[in-house]
Structures are given as C-alpha cells and as structure tokens.
Image (cartoon, rainbow, N blue to C red; front, side, top):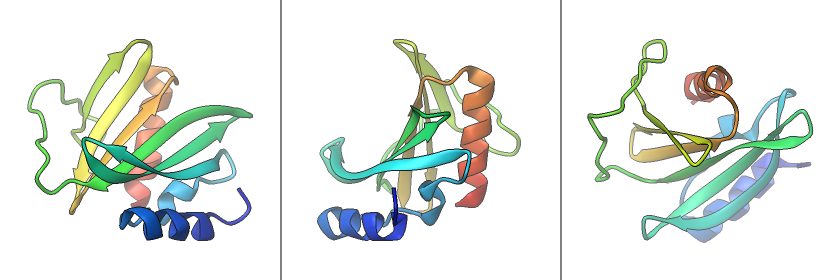
Length: 124
C-alpha cells in the first residue's frame, strides 16, 4: 500500500476509529489493505498485513472501553496478558489498550503469532 496514512485517514473518516500508525507494518510485514468494517455491532477499522507475499494477519480495531476482557485463556507474552486461542486453524489474540480493543487474527504458528503480537503491541 503506497500511503498507509492516507488509507488510515479514509477509514477513520468512515468509522471514527483512529488506526494506530503501528498497523502500517514494516519492511517484513507489509500493509496490503485498510478497510472500514463492523465488529460486535460497532464501527471498526481493519488493517491486513502480508508476510513473504501472502496475507499473514488482520487487525481489527474498535472502540472497546466497555467490552469485557475474559479472565480465562489469557496467555503471558512478555509483560502482556492478552486473551488467545485457536479457532478453526487460526490464532486469535485479543487485548485492550486505552479506549480501544484490538483483535489479531492470523494463520501463523504460535511462536510467530506471539512475535507479531509483540511487535505491534510494543509499537502502539
């Protein structure tokens, strides 16, 4: 994607959800799409990242101050304790930060999905 800032601004104009610049990716994980969407009946933003030329993960960002954070199935990833599980061959990692909720969905293996989570979470 040529201009992530422009794409994120267009998504924010439609959803009123600010997409953090960290979701623009980096040389290894390249942003391939940014889209407005709806998740849990809320406006949300989606950023899709590719790794080695294939779609690797999608991030969903939505207003989440009032969304619950499950106690069960939390995992320790360095100093963070997000909710994580595998659903139909995909890994799902959910966390909250400030007023936003983040959901990462990927088909990367467990070790790689944890690395990608850390990369983004630390950059936020």
